[in-house]
Length: 129
Image (cartoon, rainbow, N blue to C red):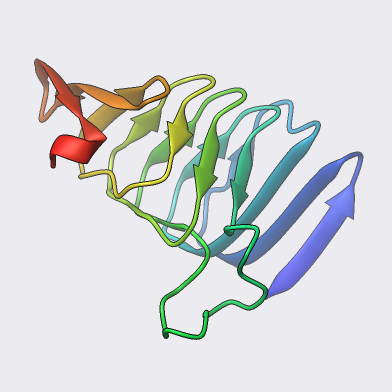
């Protein structure tokens, strides 16, 4: 796990090709793994649960988020714990994600709601999946 810290940006994890940080000020992006083409905006937090101190907790669960390919996380969003973010996902500004997000989804809000899934408009709470 490499670490880069400058200008209030902290970046660590196994990050794939094509990382794009747009105005990354005040962002903490610590991932277990990210596939290619991750885009992150300002004030984003991708981090572990405050109770976890290692990459893997005592139960053997991964503590940091994992992102698939072509994921965009917009300003102020928070992605915590060992959640899995699928491929082709957009996480809306100021959303709080603490559950897995399926591929091909747009998720917004707190509590988070999937508003688009596989190109169709929907309204599904992440806790309903």
